[in-house]
Length: 345
Image (cartoon, rainbow, N blue to C red):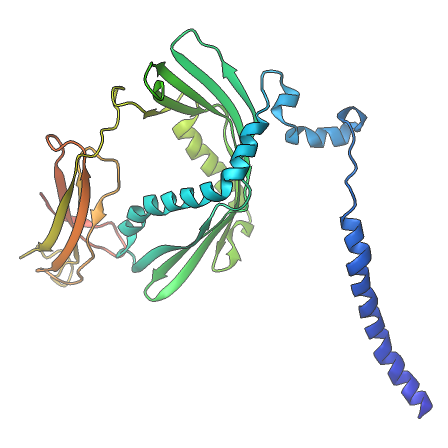
């Protein structure tokens, strides 16, 4: 009995003792190891291999005398970031709502909405800034921006009562934009136009998950997405291409201020064309004000109905009532191919 008891005690005590030792190690020794100060060396003391690996992370104001430090700006952005994060996310939510609404009713999509929208706790940082002195009435600035964010954006897409979640996380961006404040004038904010272009191809990295699976883990897809994204952004904004943002009303092409709101109610349509194979149509109406870059607004889709009723209300911001025109297009919704136009008025 003593022998059996000893064997049983040994079998039970050994794993318990090992587990206890493991947790003690994690609690004290591993934690102490993690809290040790990192070894700091001057660049001149690094070996060539370590120095080569460190060069991409060295700020530009160290490598190039043309760039200046702006730690004060980074400190300001860091302190303001919790509030900037919420303000930017609210703006993104408002700006993307019309885009999401365009796809509701197509391909069986019932709703698209953000599940979570945050840019994370780490703000963008300025690695350095270069300012050019110009003879013309303009100011040229070239900052280098790096953003290693902890962002988390989830979009919930409901398709025929089945919800699909797409998650974008850990967005990393490095940009070298050129910002030109041109047509300097003696009226606040003292410049008429803001011009922006990219001097180098942007470096963008992010994680993308679909149904909790890492899409970027698919062989070849990660590099393809990186190349296409960088290429598309470069085609739009890479120097010498410039995006010009008018600031003052007197500037050429300046954006006009809103002067009123146009209320539109789509009530019904009668005797529509039979566009489907079974002699029916699936109509919906798209509408927009001319001269606007915003996406068109649209009604819901009325399936298999030649005399649909909507009774849906829409609002448009009017900036020039003398020239702007309300454009309405009626389409027959198609599940597979693109929608066919029924009426334009």
